[in-house]
Image (cartoon, rainbow, N blue to C red; front, side, top):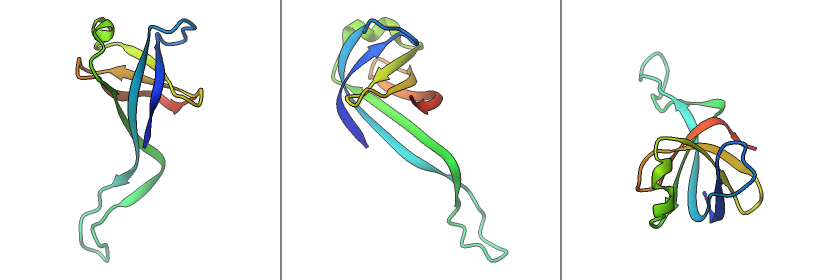
Length: 100
C-alpha cells in the first residue's frame, strides 16, 4: 500500500488543483478457477494485471466538483496515477495503465 501526501491534477495538467492525503492499495488480479479437474479452486494470478484502488483521506470540499471525472494523483515519489474520483468520500478507481 501507498500512503502519503500528494497533489491532484487535471489529466496532463501542470498546475495542481489541490494537495491531499492519500491511501492506495495495489493487489494482484486473480483468475477464478472452479474446483475440479485437478484444480484447487484457489485461482491463478493473471501476470501483469493488477487492481488499483485508492482514497483521498479526509474531506476536501474543493474536489467535490471533480466527482465523476478523471484526475491524476501525484505521489510523494513523483509518480502519477490516472484515476477517477468516484465519490465525495474520496474513493478512487483506476483509469489508464497504472502509475507513470
